[in-house]
Image (cartoon, rainbow, N blue to C red; front, side, top):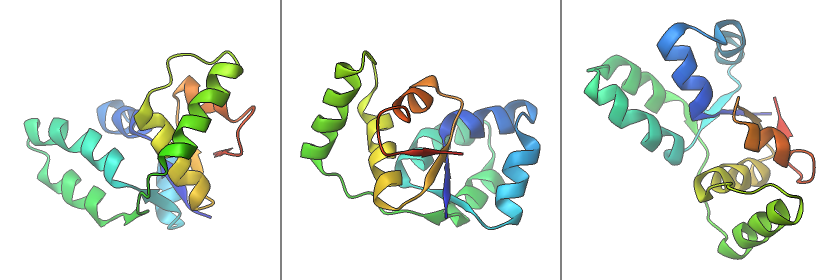
Amino acid sequence: MSVIIDTSIWVEYFRNGNNLEKVDFLIDENLVATNDLIIAELTPFLKVKKQKNLIDLLNAISKLIIHINWDQLIDLQYQCLRNGLNGVGIPDLIIVQNAMENNAKIYSIDKHFLSMADFLDVKIF
């Protein structure tokens, strides 16, 4: 099973080494997956910091293709609202949809993902 490492984890990992052991484990076990949305969130900051090697390494990670199903996104957002979870952005819902479609887990410190796991069929690492 693949694990999509969310932007929140990568930022902490690059900034101060938080989650080092878990991320390194996932890398060593070849379980890490990403998608173009996460790469798009990380790359501009890394370019500003002139971190070409990190950009290259991130782009070498197995990418899960994003197939956006807008009706499903609307339903996911509806389910969030129905369960009292407000303010979940479309990018987070796209990541959830991508994980569900690929039977992948999500590794994140974003509370939205943790809360969504209570009522959606999304797995959290």
